[in-house]
Image 1 (cartoon, rainbow, N blue to C red):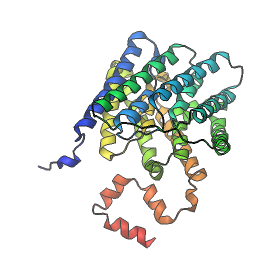
Image 2: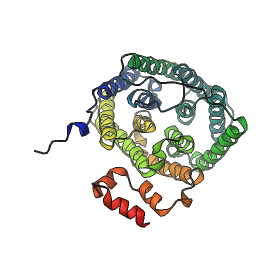
Image 3: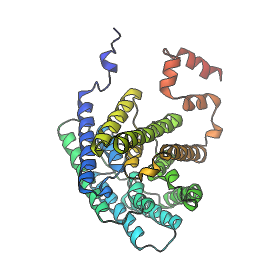
Image 4: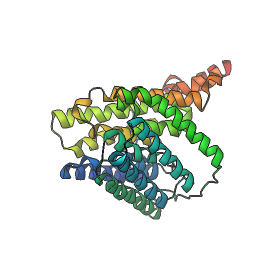
Length: 350
């Protein structure tokens, strides 16, 4: 019988198993409360991203303190609802205002927290004007902050340190303006054709992550695209087959979706927080939009990742060997070359 060695078994790390369990339980509670109360606004997709980035991943993904995270995410949610309720501007201008608000907040607080973009932009794209939404965001970000603190005290994860970065105002302002301009160019057609799922906030967060982060996922664009696409299809499949067709409760759908997603994370050995937010999107969109939703998300992800690779990483200047490594997902490379020798020979050849 072929038994996986202990060090390569899925969920082999007992402390990580607990972090997965806490994250899954929190997501299920959020979904269950939303279903029981009949308030869809309680389902905040970025909650899944926050639990992944601040609980499951041992090294904190974003440069932000817990207090600043709570304040920023709540402020973004309040700003988003205020724009929906009171702005007389067209949708494309509301998107610009929301993004500009995010940029100013992050520069003032000297923090890095791309999920803030989603907190402010999600109500604008979905037309959410209920104050329940920012109240839910406040409650859930407090839960994430408290949970991270308890995990650190219980030695379930490494303590997160936060040192505010020195802000180069001119450079940062120009960078955010360039990001805003490119996002508006990409968003123009979806906005004016009412195909807003191509520019869902987790996809814009992905674009910003690729543009500003120094993390290793920038060298795995195809793998990140496939992960986002898989999350979209998992969320849509279980929502349609489980909830719409078989009348499962929403918490059961969330259980199936995130168990599958976490298994995928463990299998490939990599995490990407926006994938968690993408997996929750099917729960908050109209049922009639589900059939095309994953295809629109996949197209939007491809567009934003390609734009980031071209505009910020200038991948057209890379050597052919570097392109091969980046465009072939690591699991596929390992499968094709288990000992790595053939891949190294190919890289040297090019």
